[in-house]
Length: 236
Image 1 (cartoon, rainbow, N blue to C red):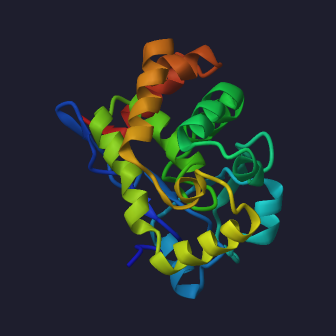
Image 2 (spheres, one colour):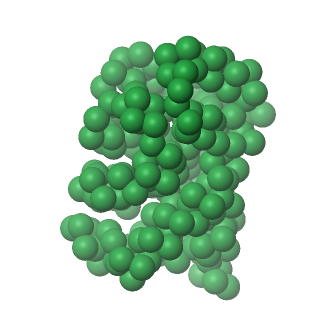
Image 3 (spheres, one colour):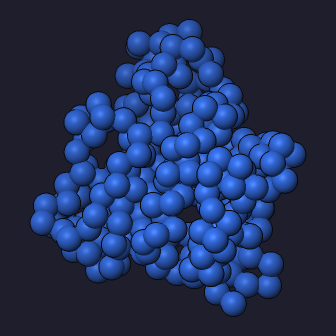
């Protein structure tokens, strides 16, 4: 059961190895949308002391599945990460790898904005609709920039596939297949988080920029912010 009832794919990224150290608990959380929160979920979320929510969804997604935060005193920062409609990925039949490379190449300014939002306030929750792709890329880069072990980042990303309820997957896939019957990558886009996809993305970022920190610096994040983020996330 989720530590926040009603929140899809919710988890703390604390406890991941970073060399001889580990990531701190109660600093960075990740999840899918918060449209399913009831009273129990809101109480659980409030109990975590989260100061900021970084919502990576597009306007139409927020309108369709609004976060049910009621009177919780938590700041929400909205940074829509896709430059176009999420539906376009199914129309164009992109692979996950192609989608992620597109995010890194075309939405660098937004990824840096998300990083700034995370660095400047914790505990912080990063989420999108499912907590798989936009959240996976954003959190993966943030973890890598702080020095978290690459295989631990990959494993955390891959966990999502097992955390998506089978009934949700069946419902979503049936709906999408009716609209996009010939899409080859539909199952991956909607329900899967293969370790190989995150591994390839991290390798690509490292080859082109030297590191995830190098990628974020190249697109405008201050080195001091990266140092501050590492100090906040990594327990020495």
